[in-house]
Length: 102
Image 1 (cartoon, helix red, strand yellow):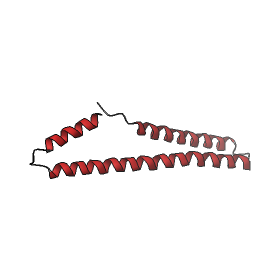
Image 2 (cartoon, one colour):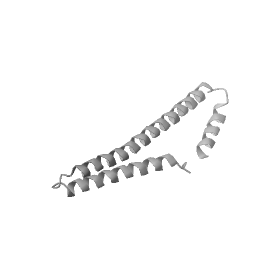
Image 3 (tube, one colour):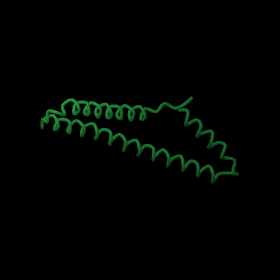
Image 4 (tube, one colour):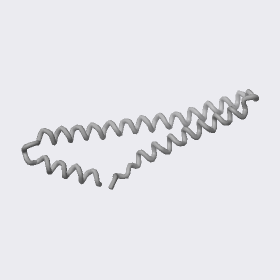
């Protein structure tokens, strides 16, 4: 059974909200292209900044999380390679499989 990853759902939802905001802004700009109101453009800049900041923060968090997971995997792999021939490799693999199912 595959492990449930809450962080991927959060990243997906934030990115979805980012693209929905972008689409909304483009629709507003398209509909108001004839009316060049400074207030509308200022409001849209604020809206894009708000959505973009959240998306940037989530992407940075997720990249950091993936980096930490990969470093741990590499350490575990190197540790199991160093123990080959000692009979402990099988125990390490069993522990890693248990950890992945939790």
